Length: 359
Ligand SMILES: Cc1ncc(COP(=O)(O)O)c(C=O)c1O
Image (tube, rainbow, N blue to C red; front, top):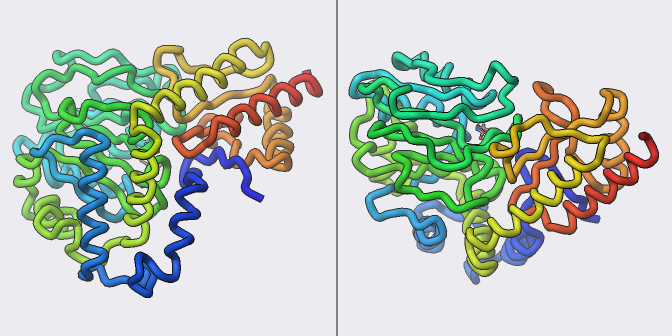
């Protein structure tokens, strides 16, 4: 039996995609082998590698002067790759702290350059996104780093922040493909795949080509964007199977109507859940409304004991991985692209039953 998996990542994959992957598991497209067993230098894999890039470019409308890389090491590796590749002109970068991952990126920035906190929402336990304006940043910063959607705290920017002419770098791990983004507002976008794109093991980097040509001499070869651009992300043995699953997810997303179509569904799912929480008189979500994430919805019941009971009973009812992150407590429902609307309906129905039994 499939459950509704509300995990923050790895998240659910569409059942249809899993079935397609399964159907080619022992013999992909008449090759007589699985993509797991395939040389990354083979023709069939070269086609997947080219097609996945082209399809992502089409779906996200990525301009021609941006490179798309499929690399390893998770989004966390980009916390180091970004300063080492693009923080090399004045060796200064400004960071906006909106949660745990934004802070981790900043800490890693401090290892490599003069990193500065331009704004933070830590004063209110990251329940909002600070208003940003160009005069909040150092004019000679090589980049401004933001985390666009904060997976743990359930916040999201309500538009592209204005950072003036400084290159804007965004960690979009938990929102990429979930809503429309104007790629040219950003100099660099990166995202671990395991929430909205595919399995863990591959990270997508979308970077303006001109920024790939200024890596620090000390930048390790696997982190160098110029190296990955030149080798089409095939410098060493890449995570072929994970990248292939992304390809199937993208094909499926295109058939659905692309990002505008899934965004509508995501907004509907999130609105239902927030509406229920806000009107329940039992559950609550602490995030300022305009910054609420449509992907990650944290909430609490009236007590820690009831939270624990909720998580256990929900799991027994087939609604799994609802325990909130240890930094926030309570519950968190991650409702990424692959979470069907029926999953959100089932969660709301369960929440209502639980409330009536425990209020
Ligand atoms: C916004 C964000 N950034 C970074 C990470 C870390 O990603 P990874 O585990 O791929 O290194 C996560 C993981 O949950 C995340 O949600």
